[in-house]
Image (cartoon, rainbow over all chains, first blue to last red; front, side, top):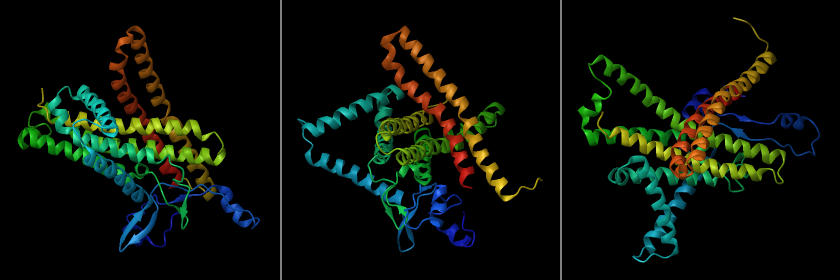
Length: 278
Length: 81
């Protein structure tokens, strides 16, 4: 199934990887040989996001397009809030204030310190809102079903491993950056490298744990949302009338929980990284 | 090494993918059940602590489920390779 005849182009093309393969249900191949009047039905499941169009040498994939849509939604909400903010809040501002109050008190219960919450709040809440909008956009009808030149036009961004890896890298690198900024480079590096044999052992485990953090952050979000999108595809394929409903509810819950877990874990690791050892 | 014919290799790949997710989801499933059991017991014993327990419980559930997700990703990689 992998096209091996153009390996160089495949390696240079960012949208393709070793896993850029589409799976098609078996009767698609057989249906092509059989009766011609019959429309072939196939499930388009691909691990990597499919490219839609090219701008120069930059490939735009369907996940990237939906990322832009999610960003546009968040910008629109922020813009509208900044235009209508008042001392006595209207309905929209009051709603946002309720949401933020709940989130900030939840973060307070995690960090136990209001100043840390206010310091790391922006990054954590950005990750939370972006991943939440990205996860919930997947449920709109039309995602993974509207096709353009044979590939789906819209696809949940968090079902593309590139996006989850990017956010995980941001979280882990900001953890180190904040540690260095708060504690100083020497104190921060002493957590990982030390001459004391016990601390050296602990430092090695911490380094391995850091790599594991990157992988676990990205794989957790990617696996949940990718599995959810495949689940919705298959259920919609098997029984489109009525059966997708409980699975849509499941996806709403899963999308919210995964966004929450990602941001809370980022906050927890940021808090740990900026505190002295013992 | 053993030589497999083309169709036998494809069949074995399907089995490998199915086994990866089947075996890899057993222990996380048990772990999720244990976490939820202990949480339910504590809430039953002390109903006012329900809101305090929810946060850490959800966090632990996500950690335990992540292991099953790793197995799922490996199964998908085997399936499409």
